[in-house]
Length: 134
Image 1 (cartoon, rainbow, N blue to C red):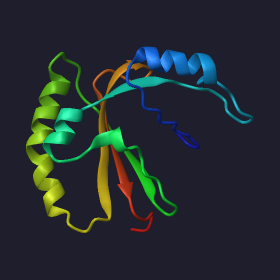
Image 2 (image 1 turned 30 degrees about the horizontal axis):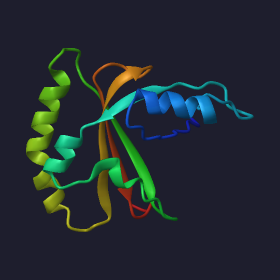
Image 3 (image 1 turned 60 degrees about the vertical axis):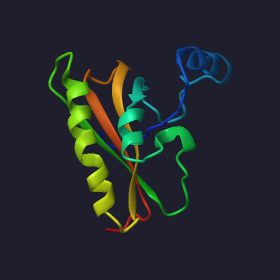
């Protein structure tokens, strides 16, 4: 997907999302936008908290020069696929974060699809890098 733009909003529940959409309008088009797709993802807060990560509760904390990276995983279909993935992921996350002591990158959130155009069993990691340089 060339030239894609992602807008990330945090909502407590669907009622809060609907109220914001009614007042501010989430489904708008700007000049040059050909289409708009919407998906709802739920944060795997327990997995993040177990590794000592706050998740999105503190916001994105964007600063000039930082870069955000979305890593998207499409898992096989099945009722237990996401919970099983999160259990395995959780088992290694704390070690992974402890061994990366550079402070250059940090996992901001871990999300899994709940509704919308994203395929079921989609998991997204949202990373914040202090610099876009390699």
